[in-house]
Length: 402
Image (tube, rainbow, N blue to C red; front, top):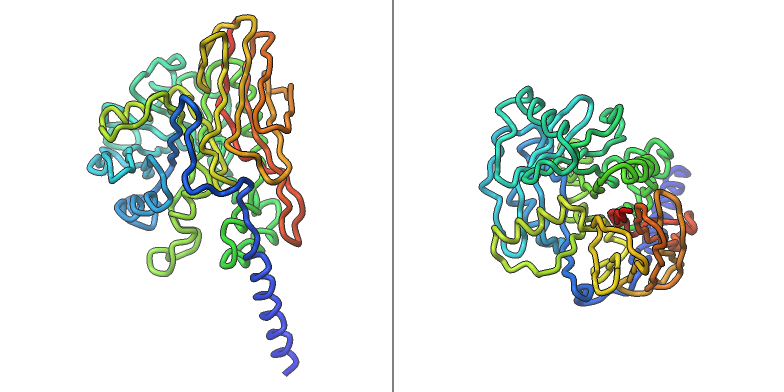
């Protein structure tokens, strides 16, 4: 009888706490019915590192595409693991969603995401694929104009990259959802279990609690970007297979929920028109050239954010390489003022040189260097948590040359 009373008390307490956290709003900026693009630029968001039932995913491509539409994505890149002669039947527009068919391949102890604009095959088997990738990685930075090669989760347990980063690599995943979850588990298993228990009441909060700063990846970015051009990406690692038998029980976390956590926001000077060939080229070029930022979207829709390197009447996009001139300014504008404490942090060659607590700022660039922007917020989390610094936005670097 006593054990039943204890169980009943714990169950009631659990649901009362659930009602309490259900009230918590994760978004750090006011919700808008329609977010506006930044002046002179068009912001389109999308995800990479997405798996279907063809490899490690739990659903067919058509289901994943529907989930991406429900998550209001503009583009999606399929990256099934070690798939050769990738099917390209889904590479097209599906409503307003632009779909790319790429692949993710084993290379040494790591995984590489590979996409060919010309739909050139990576090979018929893993051996051929590795020879092709080795050739791409050995080239000079940016030499291969029609392919995109990204190092997935560079420091994920069991898949860590060893040694120097190859010159032919376009970039790497700064954020990878599965990698971040694995680190959270390694740091505190109890905290992860608590997030699982609270997930039914506030899924976004449960996922946000798992966030840990990707310090190793940031260090890699700051080291590499002072040596050569390198891009950072956000990878969803979407498979909806966090529990066993996902195909037969429940897809968790759902593809839609995963797509709503973080994404890559490309900035274009002209809008997408609905023409597959031209729009695919625009998105590909932005991802190739680093003209985008990555954002933790569940903290608030960042659409309207912009960072530019301005000189006279010229304004340069994120990821640009520009020659230093006197009077240059790095300008940053948030889409709205966050309701929580926040700061815009400007980095030069990996070192913080300015912290601003205003939604719009200009920073005088007085010398050459590699500059990037990071926007952090510090929301008050529900008990038993407290305030926590979380990065909302990372930009790709600006390269100001002598």
